[in-house]
Length: 196
Image 1 (cartoon, one colour):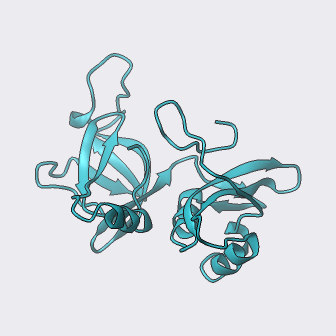
Image 2 (cartoon, one colour):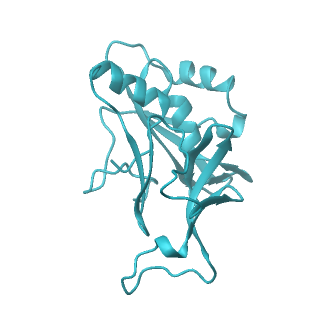
């Protein structure tokens, strides 16, 4: 609930619960549950029609889908930008994070969700959290907390080497911390930044 469901997590869940039917649901604060997928690739449904669209890599909702309570966001035009960033493909689109979540390290914007997806896919890793920490030199440095699988030998050097094949140098975390579990908010969501 409340987190992205990537392929690595889905595979692990399916191994733990082989007879379970996994459903990935995307709900927005503004409009509630809108999209469902069997994996991480979403498509707009016929019932949703043309009331959701991707504009410049961001999910937009038609004003008719928005709540009517006072204080709810109201679009200036017909389309409301949700702040949900997506990557489109021929099969549909995948959620990549939210506007403002990018970490600026040395002038490079890094999407922590994408780095987490790659770290979590490594066989030694059970879970992880990527976040930025203030740096007087770089603006922010990329940090990663890792929960490793108990039976694996997981080292910072090994993780860095594996990521080097997939990521540019600025997207590889500089600070690594191995932990037993990740901190979450009262509602069970993973913390986004070190200040949450």
